[in-house]
Structures are given as structure tokens and as C-alpha cells.
Length: 312
Length: 296
Figure 1 (cartoon, each protein chain N blue to C red):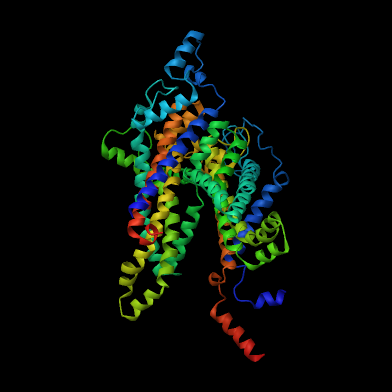
Figure 2: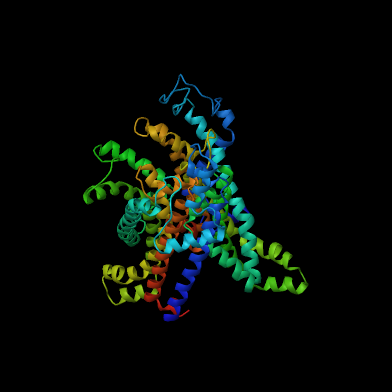
């Protein structure tokens, strides 16, 4: 177990290193001059440009720029935004609750809805409930999150005209209410995929030999399904959910745009359009790190539950 | 041939397959023959007829510059489908040889190629595409290229796993003992046997590519105006969502219908290729068949 954990953590660190270099290089391949992004169309003199270059560390060699960026990143110093001329960390902390909240609430909603539905659908295979929920999930799986959000807004505007789509939020209840609709809209894709997987795993487990033994011993079907089949069926669903986490992170970029929430996603797209290097690389690094940390944690938990993995 | 097919249990043309396939063919025909269906130019501005509701001349109404929505959906389908096809082609050109070589040779080559794939997979899918677009600039070409590269690892890993199964079979040994070159063994002997599974995966990828491209165009990183594309149309008309919902949402409905039909069709193909999942004829029909066999 110890060996597996160490190996997995080492693998994580190496991946982070490669990813950071990749992000740094890709951002710098952009053909737009970063100075143009800093100046933003205002008139300048060569002296001011030189001053700005030193201020943002663009006069240093590229390798030194990389190390000062990654060193700062690890210490929580995220550099200065070109466009806003302000520390990136300030920009991010204001927006972090939106994106993290969206991803967190959406995954909770998805799990709470999809897992019980999947079990019930599997237990009553080919019943009207199973057919209808399977068809709905098929349609949801083919709907990108931004489209789901648009349809959802249409629905809310028709039936709940008082729902607050815009404006800021100060208190926690306001924040939760504002996050509710986008989180639901974001969760649909994950609901569809988790439901389908939960259902097919459950059906597979219900046909396994041990289920037959349970039936022969006279266990009630409910006990077999929920206590025995369910435990075996849910593990792969949770591990796939950790991969889907990545698509939730990207999905939140789209949902934020539609619901005009100022989160990391909208900031990322703006910074890409404005060639704002510092913001681009910090957000991308943060999102990839979030994704990798989640999959690391899930892998380790998985190894804890399933001895076949850690002994391999 | 026809008679023997009829007798085999389980059919390919189940109800969902027939419905999805006919909708797909219908949509494809409409998109291909767009100039014969509508005579309007998709980019023609008509400032006298702005934001009109559905009518005989404009089946789905017009947008904020008076362009016909129906025409733009048809022509936008060309952009969306062709660029999705481009994404899949790029992933095929890079992914399949990578997977085949990686699986066939194994060892160091395999390790290096798979580690590269692991790095690509460590990005949430669309995020990597965003990074590519940040590096090489916005636009449809770059979005297609970026997504194509994002799709490579999945395809490479699938091809590699198929190769690992195939390469230990006797026919490969036979080909080797006759003295065939590695290239001939990989591409002429083994590859055709991997093809059915790969084709199913590619059809699924096509659906994903349509969705991902729509997402990128929606964010303004893909198609640039005035080209019409399903994703970009949604962005263009988003402001009129509550005032004229049909106009704003119709490109989205076309996306959903197309992708869902594609998924249903692939599901049907997969079901057929795995006999244990094949849809059986009803008990009534089976009994009738039994009777026929007994009488004969």
C-alpha cells in the first residue's frame, strides 16, 4: 500500500511539472505582443514600455520567467494581470467561490439524483419507469451544458419569473439561491452518464452468481439489491465520476457564461481573448491541479477499498 | 443471403435503429442539398425584416439582422458537420498509427507514447483545446486542430488495447513466419480486424466533436462571424432567448436531435455486434418459428 501511494504521488508531481511547462510554453506561443495587452491601445513612449517590461518581468529570459512564475505559484503569489494591472490572486479569490461552488453542487446533485434512479431503474428493468428515464438520460447525454442552461433559463423565465438571474450576492442564502439554477443545469450531463453506468452495473451485478446464492438462501430482493449488488455496482461509478469532474470544470466555464456569473471560467475566456498571460496560465494551472488532485484522491481511496489495485 | 439473415435470431434493424437512421439520413440530405431547399442566402442581411416570427418566407423567423434562421441552420450544419468530421480525421491520422505501433512493438516505444498520451489526458478535455486556441489564435481551423489532438489519446489507447489482443493470435505468427514486413503485418493483417470496434468509437467521437465544437464556437473561440455554425448561432441569438425562444433555441434542438440519433444508432450497432445483447424477437414470433421448424 505504502509503495502504491508513493508511486502515485510521484506520478502526480511529475505530471504537474510537465503540465506547468506545457501551459507556460503554450501561453507564450501566442502571436499577440503581451505589451500590447498591458498598454491596451493607449499611447506610450519607449521609456514607459521598457518600464512596463521590467515591472511585469518580461525583460528576463524565458527560463527565468518560468521559474519565477512557478515559484510564485507555489507560494501563493500569482503575479500581476496585464489587462487589469492588479494582482491575479485578488481576481481569483473573488471568483473562486463561484466556480468551485458550481462544480461541487453540480456533482452532489448529480450523484444524489443519478445513483438511486439507476438502482431503481435496474431493479425494474424494462418497466415504463426504466424506459422513460433511460430515454431522458439519452437526450441529456447529447445536450451540451450551455444548451441545457439556455433551455433551463427559458423554463425558469416561464415558470419562476422572480428567480434572480443577475445582480450580485452578499449573504450566504443569496449565494446559494443564485448558484442553484446553474448548478442544476451543469449537473444534467453527469446525471445522464452516471445513471446509465449505475443502471448497467446494477443489472450486471444482479445477474451474478452470488445474487443467485442470496436468492436461494431466501434473502429479500431489497436486501440483495441494496446491501450486496449496490456496493459492488457503485465503485466504478464513483471512479468514473472523478474523470467526469474534468468535464464539469470545463462545463462550468460554459454555464458561467450563460448565467453571466463572474467565475474563473468567464475570466479565463476573457484573458485568452486579451492575451493576458498571467491570468491565463494561473487559471489553467489551477483548474488542471484541481482535476489532478481529485483524481489522485479518488485513486488512493479506490486502492484503499479494492485490494486488487494496490497489490498489482 | 437474405433468407439466411431472416432466420438468424436478433435483427440489426430494430425500431430505435430505423428511426434514428432515417432522421440522420433526412438531416444529412437537407444539409447537403441546402441550396435546393431554400433559395435565400444564409448571410443576406434584410434590415426591414428584423426579428420576425415564423412565416411562409422565413420558416423559423429571422435574426437581429434579418437573416433567415432556417437557411442559416441548414448551411450552419455544413460547417458544424464538416468541422466535426475534420476533428475525427485528425484524431484518426495521429491516433491510430500511434496505437498500432505502441501496441505492436511494446517496450520503450510504447512507454514513451503512452506517457505522452497520459499528459494529454491529464487536462480536462476542452481545457486543452482552450490552451491550443490561446497559443495559435482563435478561429475554426485552430479549434478543429486543437480538438483533434485532444481526441488522440482515447483513440490511441483503444487501438493499442485491440492490437494487444490481436497480435498474439496465430494468423499474425503465420504472417511473420512467411516473412511479411512489420508494416504489412500491422496495417494489412492486424488493422482490418481492429476496424469494426474503431469505427463504432469514431461514430461516437463524431457526436462528441459536434458538441465540443459547438461549445467552443459558443464561447467565441471557434467559428468567427459571419460564418453560420450551430454553436455560434446559439451565441448570436442568446440575447433574444426570452423574447423569441424558437429562433434562439432551434439550432440547439438540431444539435440535440443529431447527436442523440447518432448515439442511438451506435448503440444499435454495438448491440448487434455483441450477440448476448441483441434484441430478440418476441416470444410469439419465436414460437411461430419453432412451429415452422417442427412442421418442416
